[in-house]
Image (tube, rainbow, N blue to C red; front, side, top):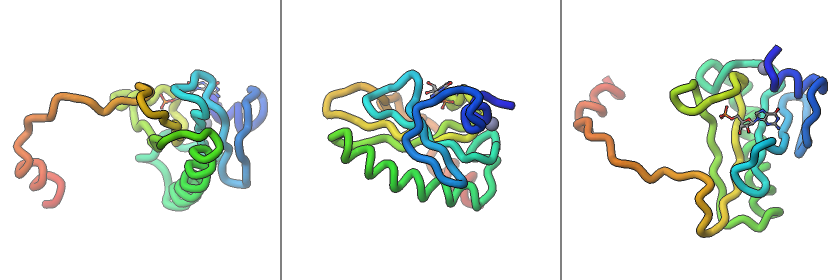
Length: 130
Ligand code: 5GP
Ligand code: ZN
């Protein structure tokens, strides 16, 4: 069993934000911002890349509802909704989860500032569309 399966089974405690037959939403134990929440599908799958369509649909519907609610309730100015796929992308728990990260003007909770990739965009387009 993985740590999130243990949380879903109730053998590891968590602070529950929302639960239904398909998903569990909990406060992140190491929050990036006030209200940082994780949404876990109850059915184990390693990441978004391995999830079946039904799991993705349930997760997306919940992420939409909770993102709106959490942003309103925290008084946040915006939020990041993201899921890390694989170690290279920063995934540390191999059980699919969506982060809802409320953002407050001027905070530095998540940053997409970066040097632009230099690959020829036409090459990239060919790769992605051929
Ligand atoms: P990842 O890096 O895999 O996208 O995110 C994993 C997240 O799970 C991290 O933000 C981390 O703080 C959180 N996390 C890890 N272990 C636990 C736990 O036992 N309980 C809770 N509530 N969050 C956890
Ligand atoms: Zn699991």
